[in-house]
Image (cartoon, rainbow, N blue to C red; front, side, top):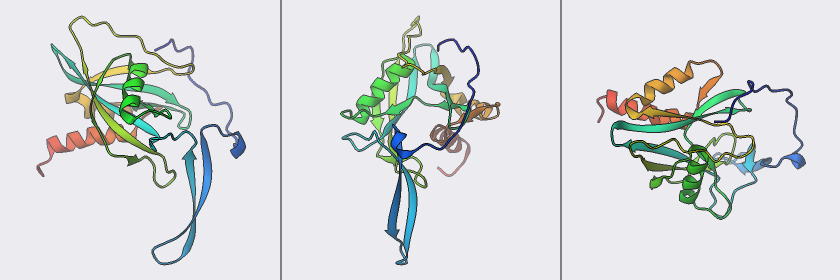
Length: 207
Protein backbone atom coordinates (compact mmCIF):
# COMPACT_ATOMS: atom_id res chain seq x y z
CA UNK A 1 0.00 0.00 0.00
CA UNK A 2 1.38 3.41 -0.93
CA UNK A 3 2.10 5.88 1.86
CA UNK A 4 -1.04 7.59 3.13
CA UNK A 5 -0.30 11.31 3.32
CA UNK A 6 -3.65 12.34 4.78
CA UNK A 7 -7.15 11.12 5.52
CA UNK A 8 -9.49 11.38 2.51
CA UNK A 9 -11.83 14.38 2.65
CA UNK A 10 -15.05 14.93 0.71
CA UNK A 11 -15.00 18.52 -0.49
CA UNK A 12 -18.38 18.70 -2.26
CA UNK A 13 -21.40 16.59 -3.19
CA UNK A 14 -23.55 17.76 -6.09
CA UNK A 15 -26.08 16.45 -8.59
CA UNK A 16 -24.49 14.76 -11.61
CA UNK A 17 -26.09 15.31 -15.03
CA UNK A 18 -26.69 11.97 -16.75
CA UNK A 19 -24.72 13.02 -19.82
CA UNK A 20 -21.61 13.54 -17.65
CA UNK A 21 -21.75 10.14 -15.96
CA UNK A 22 -18.96 7.80 -17.12
CA UNK A 23 -19.70 4.62 -15.21
CA UNK A 24 -23.36 4.65 -14.15
CA UNK A 25 -26.66 5.93 -15.51
CA UNK A 26 -30.27 6.10 -14.30
CA UNK A 27 -33.26 4.49 -15.99
CA UNK A 28 -37.00 4.55 -15.41
CA UNK A 29 -38.74 1.18 -15.63
CA UNK A 30 -42.45 1.11 -16.44
CA UNK A 31 -44.03 -2.22 -15.57
CA UNK A 32 -47.30 -3.93 -14.63
CA UNK A 33 -47.30 -5.68 -11.27
CA UNK A 34 -48.88 -8.97 -10.19
CA UNK A 35 -52.22 -7.27 -9.58
CA UNK A 36 -52.35 -5.66 -13.02
CA UNK A 37 -51.44 -2.19 -11.78
CA UNK A 38 -49.04 -0.03 -13.79
CA UNK A 39 -46.03 1.15 -11.81
CA UNK A 40 -42.63 2.79 -12.28
CA UNK A 41 -39.22 2.10 -10.76
CA UNK A 42 -35.99 4.07 -10.74
CA UNK A 43 -32.89 1.97 -11.36
CA UNK A 44 -29.16 2.63 -11.54
CA UNK A 45 -27.32 0.68 -14.25
CA UNK A 46 -23.64 0.28 -15.10
CA UNK A 47 -22.36 1.40 -18.49
CA UNK A 48 -19.49 -1.09 -18.43
CA UNK A 49 -21.24 -4.48 -18.73
CA UNK A 50 -19.42 -6.63 -21.30
CA UNK A 51 -20.21 -9.65 -23.45
CA UNK A 52 -20.42 -12.00 -20.47
CA UNK A 53 -23.46 -10.08 -19.18
CA UNK A 54 -21.94 -9.88 -15.70
CA UNK A 55 -20.67 -6.68 -14.14
CA UNK A 56 -18.18 -7.78 -11.52
CA UNK A 57 -16.47 -10.59 -9.66
CA UNK A 58 -15.67 -10.85 -5.96
CA UNK A 59 -12.80 -13.11 -4.98
CA UNK A 60 -13.10 -15.22 -1.87
CA UNK A 61 -9.71 -16.69 -1.16
CA UNK A 62 -7.88 -19.23 0.98
CA UNK A 63 -4.14 -18.88 1.59
CA UNK A 64 -2.41 -22.20 2.23
CA UNK A 65 0.99 -22.12 3.98
CA UNK A 66 3.15 -25.08 5.10
CA UNK A 67 3.40 -23.93 8.72
CA UNK A 68 0.52 -21.50 9.20
CA UNK A 69 -3.24 -22.09 9.53
CA UNK A 70 -5.49 -21.65 6.47
CA UNK A 71 -6.14 -17.94 6.11
CA UNK A 72 -7.87 -15.43 3.90
CA UNK A 73 -6.73 -12.05 2.60
CA UNK A 74 -9.02 -9.07 2.92
CA UNK A 75 -8.46 -5.63 1.46
CA UNK A 76 -9.24 -2.28 3.05
CA UNK A 77 -9.82 0.80 0.94
CA UNK A 78 -11.54 4.16 1.13
CA UNK A 79 -14.94 4.31 -0.60
CA UNK A 80 -16.20 7.86 -1.32
CA UNK A 81 -19.92 6.92 -1.46
CA UNK A 82 -19.66 5.87 2.19
CA UNK A 83 -16.93 8.32 3.23
CA UNK A 84 -15.47 5.33 5.06
CA UNK A 85 -12.96 2.55 4.69
CA UNK A 86 -14.51 -0.73 3.63
CA UNK A 87 -13.31 -4.19 4.57
CA UNK A 88 -13.75 -6.43 1.54
CA UNK A 89 -12.48 -9.38 -0.40
CA UNK A 90 -10.64 -8.38 -3.57
CA UNK A 91 -13.08 -7.61 -6.38
CA UNK A 92 -13.41 -5.75 -9.62
CA UNK A 93 -15.28 -5.16 -12.84
CA UNK A 94 -15.14 -7.80 -15.57
CA UNK A 95 -13.58 -6.44 -18.76
CA UNK A 96 -15.53 -6.56 -22.02
CA UNK A 97 -14.01 -9.79 -23.35
CA UNK A 98 -13.25 -11.54 -20.06
CA UNK A 99 -14.91 -14.39 -18.24
CA UNK A 100 -15.51 -14.12 -14.50
CA UNK A 101 -12.71 -16.64 -13.92
CA UNK A 102 -10.23 -14.60 -15.96
CA UNK A 103 -11.23 -11.40 -14.20
CA UNK A 104 -10.82 -13.07 -10.80
CA UNK A 105 -7.23 -14.11 -11.53
CA UNK A 106 -6.36 -10.68 -12.96
CA UNK A 107 -7.98 -8.64 -10.21
CA UNK A 108 -6.51 -10.79 -7.44
CA UNK A 109 -3.04 -10.33 -8.91
CA UNK A 110 -3.53 -6.57 -9.22
CA UNK A 111 -4.93 -5.97 -5.73
CA UNK A 112 -2.85 -8.48 -3.74
CA UNK A 113 0.18 -9.28 -5.90
CA UNK A 114 -0.45 -13.02 -5.59
CA UNK A 115 -1.15 -15.63 -8.25
CA UNK A 116 -4.16 -17.80 -7.54
CA UNK A 117 -6.07 -20.82 -8.79
CA UNK A 118 -9.83 -20.64 -9.26
CA UNK A 119 -11.51 -23.44 -7.30
CA UNK A 120 -15.15 -22.59 -7.98
CA UNK A 121 -17.35 -19.90 -9.48
CA UNK A 122 -20.86 -19.03 -8.33
CA UNK A 123 -23.96 -18.48 -10.45
CA UNK A 124 -24.77 -14.86 -11.28
CA UNK A 125 -25.98 -12.96 -8.20
CA UNK A 126 -27.78 -9.65 -7.79
CA UNK A 127 -25.81 -6.99 -5.96
CA UNK A 128 -28.49 -4.51 -4.80
CA UNK A 129 -31.80 -5.49 -6.45
CA UNK A 130 -33.88 -2.69 -4.96
CA UNK A 131 -31.72 0.03 -6.49
CA UNK A 132 -29.76 -1.44 -9.39
CA UNK A 133 -29.58 -4.21 -11.97
CA UNK A 134 -25.88 -4.64 -11.06
CA UNK A 135 -24.86 -8.28 -10.85
CA UNK A 136 -21.76 -10.26 -9.97
CA UNK A 137 -20.25 -13.67 -9.49
CA UNK A 138 -18.22 -14.99 -6.58
CA UNK A 139 -14.98 -16.78 -7.38
CA UNK A 140 -13.32 -18.90 -4.72
CA UNK A 141 -9.57 -19.18 -5.21
CA UNK A 142 -6.59 -20.84 -3.56
CA UNK A 143 -3.12 -19.36 -3.07
CA UNK A 144 -0.26 -21.78 -2.42
CA UNK A 145 2.49 -20.18 -0.32
CA UNK A 146 5.97 -21.40 0.51
CA UNK A 147 8.20 -20.91 3.52
CA UNK A 148 10.10 -17.65 3.27
CA UNK A 149 7.97 -16.15 0.49
CA UNK A 150 8.22 -12.38 0.43
CA UNK A 151 5.04 -10.34 0.13
CA UNK A 152 4.68 -9.50 -3.59
CA UNK A 153 4.09 -6.02 -4.91
CA UNK A 154 0.58 -4.97 -5.82
CA UNK A 155 -0.25 -3.74 -9.31
CA UNK A 156 -2.56 -0.89 -8.38
CA UNK A 157 -3.96 1.69 -10.76
CA UNK A 158 -3.60 5.42 -10.24
CA UNK A 159 -5.81 6.48 -7.33
CA UNK A 160 -6.01 3.01 -5.79
CA UNK A 161 -4.77 2.69 -2.21
CA UNK A 162 -5.43 -0.81 -0.96
CA UNK A 163 -4.22 -2.30 2.31
CA UNK A 164 -3.83 -6.09 2.50
CA UNK A 165 -4.61 -7.99 5.70
CA UNK A 166 -4.29 -11.75 6.25
CA UNK A 167 -6.72 -13.32 8.74
CA UNK A 168 -6.77 -16.98 9.88
CA UNK A 169 -10.08 -18.51 8.87
CA UNK A 170 -10.62 -19.61 12.46
CA UNK A 171 -10.70 -15.91 13.47
CA UNK A 172 -12.53 -14.58 10.42
CA UNK A 173 -15.91 -13.74 11.93
CA UNK A 174 -14.50 -12.26 15.14
CA UNK A 175 -12.05 -10.03 13.23
CA UNK A 176 -14.82 -8.65 11.02
CA UNK A 177 -16.92 -7.86 14.08
CA UNK A 178 -13.92 -5.98 15.50
CA UNK A 179 -13.50 -4.01 12.26
CA UNK A 180 -17.19 -3.10 12.27
CA UNK A 181 -16.75 -1.38 15.64
CA UNK A 182 -13.94 0.87 14.45
CA UNK A 183 -14.62 4.47 13.52
CA UNK A 184 -15.01 5.19 9.80
CA UNK A 185 -14.86 1.47 8.98
CA UNK A 186 -17.58 -0.63 7.33
CA UNK A 187 -17.48 -4.34 6.48
CA UNK A 188 -18.83 -5.15 3.01
CA UNK A 189 -22.09 -7.08 3.20
CA UNK A 190 -21.07 -10.01 1.00
CA UNK A 191 -17.93 -10.53 3.05
CA UNK A 192 -19.75 -10.43 6.38
CA UNK A 193 -22.52 -12.71 5.06
CA UNK A 194 -19.92 -15.34 4.16
CA UNK A 195 -18.13 -15.11 7.52
CA UNK A 196 -21.41 -15.06 9.43
CA UNK A 197 -22.56 -18.14 7.53
CA UNK A 198 -19.37 -19.96 8.53
CA UNK A 199 -19.82 -18.86 12.14
CA UNK A 200 -23.49 -19.87 12.17
CA UNK A 201 -22.73 -23.32 10.78
CA UNK A 202 -20.05 -23.85 13.44
CA UNK A 203 -22.05 -22.61 16.42
CA UNK A 204 -25.63 -23.76 15.74
CA UNK A 205 -27.02 -27.30 15.75
CA UNK A 206 -29.26 -27.28 12.69
CA UNK A 207 -26.85 -29.34 10.60
